[in-house]
Image (cartoon, rainbow, N blue to C red):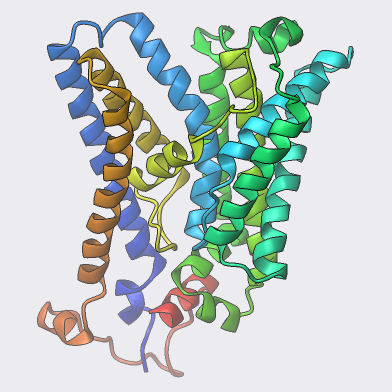
Length: 364
């Protein structure tokens, strides 16, 4: 009989420790890159450049947090850039024409539109049973086409936006930019959901082992819909921020944004194999990515090299995580050689497990 003590090597605590270690290592790397860039590149340490890094990364963080949830559930959403662009134009136009549309109305419209588009992705994946990569690649084209149709080849200009939206990028609260507050709020809320709620445990369980999760009574259908709705909603919110950040929104808004978002999540330790990672890691990955891009720009390295960096970062992050996963899933014989022995059975036949521990035990 295997007791609760014996399952500590496969319990969520082990994955939790690994996630924290990934985040700590990423934070150390971020500090190292910051120090080196600040010492070697005078333009890097200017207040304007620092503000630019945090503003740009805040926009990516909001969308990357939603993408992280989908990836943790062993799915992927390639349509977030198109959702962002479509939301930027539609919501920006709507709040510009509705006289009473303040920040609350604008945010709600962006969240609802994005969630609806995310649910459509979920319908294709769950209802039609299309692989997520194929379904969201298709909706990337569909939403981009809709974006071209609704814009009629025209642009949404900054002067057409209401004052609160046009000036949101430059607004601050307690000396900190509103964009940073929004990104921080998204990271905190989603982190709390995935860490302290059953919903979050179910998302991790689905990503770790979908068959075992369903055996334990977790509804893969409902959780998949919810994960894509969250991802779409945050992409919609990102669209509102995009409209404020860049002002002019056309049919190409958000094009290629999905690669940056996925790169930020993967660099932040969110495994493309599902079942591990965190919103905080995705946020740190986004900041690191923009620090590197800023340093490359100051070194006058072309934008094409920066795009190559994003792709290479995904490959390296996936390769590193794959090697770590193999080491963490060593055979039982190896664990015995390391001195890990099953504990003696407890009286009455084995200890009791929590829902999360049972999920991890079955998945392993």
